[in-house]
Image 1: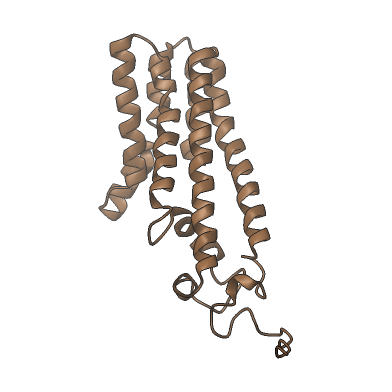
Image 2 (image 1 turned 30 degrees about the vertical axis):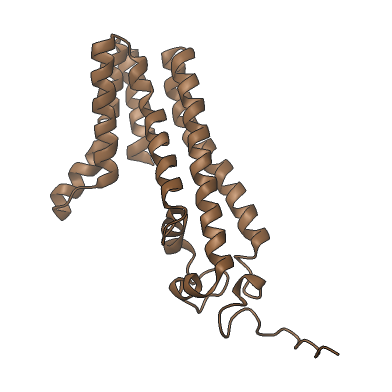
Length: 217
């Protein structure tokens, strides 16, 4: 967050205070997130795909700004990033591993819901578990596309210096809003409760501690 969000915005306003032009300030500040990609390349001898995408998006935007003569093309980089992110989420929603599950698994597996069961087993045995993560992925995807649309309006209509700051704040606001929506949905679906019906399809999970049903008469 510090390198990819706070430092670029701070650097932009420092450059603008020194009377550096819009395009130069945007390009220089946009290069800061690329330092993470370079560090990964030097340390681990591999490319950081996210960092590579961010730098590529900046270079494309910078090229359009030079050709079109407007720094607003650089501001549209944020909208482009969110369009790609939204499309990525939606493209994986029906696949074997929805993106929301991949991002959430390192944080939640073994810490919520049926803690002693692998998510691989849950995915294989529980259609409702799969549905929760497919819907969560769609929520993130649609939210990212809405965020992209708002960014496009901000980039094209507001003063450039104001749009840069709002773009940074929007990342935080978007994350909070979507996290609240997703967590409310997941709680209502029973993902976080170990006795939830969500886990009934998994042997030995979900039904423990429930009263046995009376036989039908």
